[in-house]
Length: 202
Image (cartoon, rainbow, N blue to C red; front, side, top):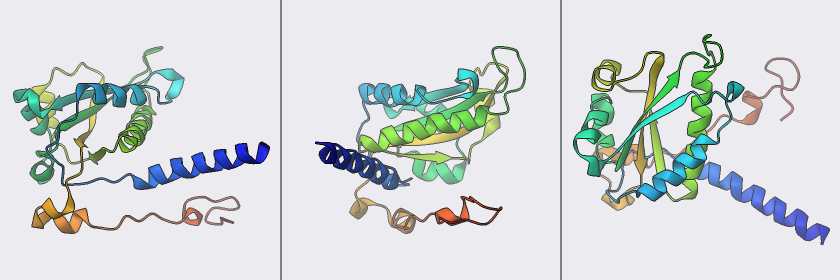
């Protein structure tokens, strides 16, 4: 019985690892709709992320294509280079971080880190549902500030496109090279040091 339990745990661990490895940032999205129920599930996973003093400093402005003018406002906050492909995604988001702690008004130097943890949760949940997201640093902050009534103390951080990946045979030629690019990561020994800096046994 113990061996069966151990094997089950190992299998689950492997499945979870493979899920994380499956995550990808496509530039070719299908026009298939993402439902309100799916978005609620995604944001439920997002909100359970860890944060410094549990301040949860993340905020999201989200728009679906069905919202028309609101979707266009979010799209206008994305730079022209990214708009070319992001405009096909059924869901767009803008992310924000609160710059100060609620508890004492002091600067929260970890707010971007915590937002990143929340988006990490979002990314894992999205992948588990057969969806994909692409985070973008390429935004137009002035457009966002001028369009949305953002409370003082919040700063815009990034944009996100979310949806189903387009079948490769339907990907426009100008995007095929990016869409087929092999994912790569630095080996563990380059990022984890268990001796002196730069020295690793991994």
